[in-house]
Figure 1: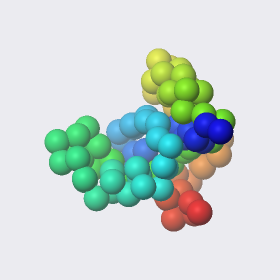
Figure 2: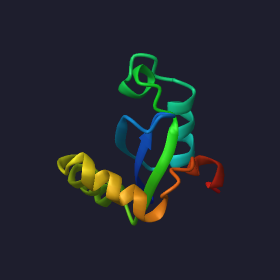
Figure 3: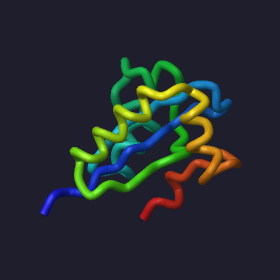
Figure 4: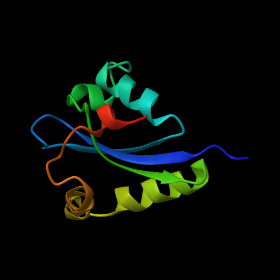
Length: 97
């Protein structure tokens, strides 16, 4: 049975920079972003530490396909995705199981 995949969008505290990624372990991956585990990464450089959107997929292949689709879209399309489910841009990390 394939592992679930997650496609997610994170931002910084001022909601000015967006980062889209995928993971099979969402909570662990977001924690690494928050802790700046990869010190030279894009998310560490721009202080991206707030999970504002995520989707669950049946497998990683689907999650990666969706990540590419989101990344290929405009910033406005990403903002609309976030606004539909999380208009306050609350950090969803704290609600993850």
